[in-house]
Length: 420
Image (cartoon, rainbow, N blue to C red; front, side, top):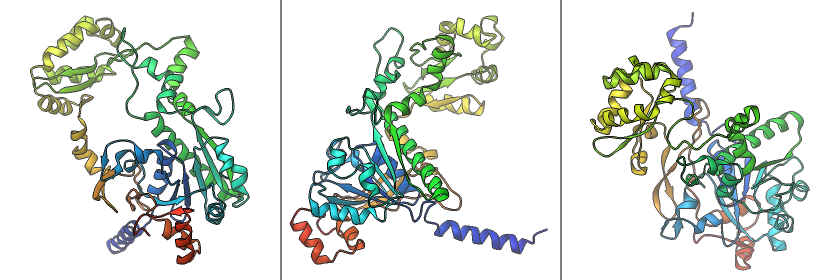
């Protein structure tokens, strides 16, 4: 049996490793050559895990730098998805910039881009062109519909993918027009798949020594998420209807308004949770024949929902939520964004992190969603000002200060005022 002293020493050593770890991807270098959300956010996720991410931007900058609410010239769309990166502004249309790009490629492990042809090849960014400078590179192309096929080359964003993949048709109340999903779930899902593809390709390269091309598109990401609805159609020919806030498979399941005007989610996918709900509300619906089984409750859903609406209206939201949670009922508040930002579990999980922005000072950004015990992910760098690290990156590539200033003067590169 191990002694208490040995266990304490091992624990202390593990704690020390945890404090000093730089993330599981420490040593991996990523080039973010994408714009907007899906591609850049994938690079962010890799940066969260410890990768050194360099974001190459044109003099205009990532399109997201020009979208969303603005504060001192910095836009929320860019700030919200570009933590843990360094920004290098490089005009790849110029021969001198291509020389910088090629020197940079020699030390890059993963390149992410969503630039479409013919601009992709014109800027020297295609897989074949990049391989000439880093043979084992992992090149990831993010497109709307795929790199080939009948829709190849078309522009596309999250909203369009929702239309093609049937998500919009499924969203909304029965009999009402369909509605889009406001949160960019397709983009964020795609970013996770891009990051996952990068990790798998890195693992394969560890074994084979070979890099490869990886392609991920918004359409495929959402078809992947539509597995259950497409499965219902492919297996039994069922077209899933719009159900609003109700469930197609069980009842009660929906949103109810409380005495204070705030709303709450309650859902009961099994007899167990329905009995717990009845106990919490001090009602005997579970003893009534019309609500005896899941199918009975679906058949009498209007009556059940009406009774639940009356009962919920007798409590404030927080009072009711406490009762339901104590009774082990599946329930949640309908939080507004300010409530999400102060939610104790969100804060406990470290999902909002303070970081020091070069221009704005202290700001909060979302944090890494994966938690490691020995190699923790972290927010090490605030979203960069446009060209903030141009001088720093060029210095690492071996350019002298004089050469760098000459390139800045010639608009080959651009650097933020006073930037590294």
